[in-house]
Length: 254
Image (cartoon, rainbow, N blue to C red; front, side, top):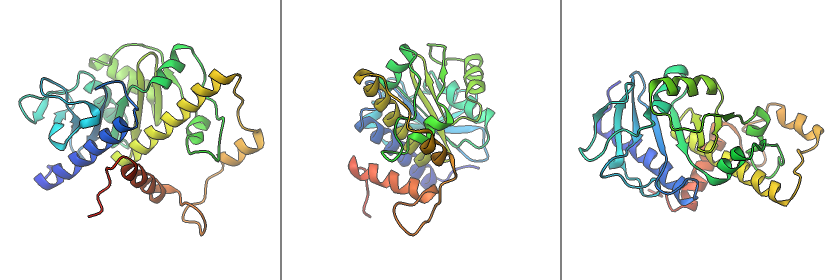
């Protein structure tokens, strides 16, 4: 599906906003990291660019988003920008899993430190935040401590990820996928919260998972659109996206 100029601009702004939110939350190291979006019906993606004219994740603008094909070649974008060297991480996630619409790769320090020390990610809270659901599903670590620079490594990492929504990368960072840019961003924030809490708990002592009775309760399908409290599902995810947009001054009141 070819994008109109308006559609390209709208999607690029959403990708750029995701980058700026995570940058302002200090979820990545320096200028590193990238967010991509699969253009429906094509073998191409929009992705935060690198190159001579790049800016850091925290300062990403719509004009910093380029179109890249599934051979990691730029097919649209300014001359001073080029595909990230780790475009293969993104494109192989799209090749392996048709359900994935967005891929995020960033370098949050607590997650990296936990992988260096081989500390497991435990479900140490439930009512505190949504990250417990990720811990219950299991947060695994890709053991290669290198950048994903070619097709071989991209396919290997995508095979490791399978249908998982999140993964840590030893001494490197995290990768997260979602059904939209908003979905992947909210999940990345939840993973950062989970790894940060685990990291701090390990510093304090010997963290313990929440009680078994609560673990079993959390594993049950959660009701959405209920009459009290926050809703779940996509509506709840978008409310969380809106919160972080407002928190980081990225919310447009129209």
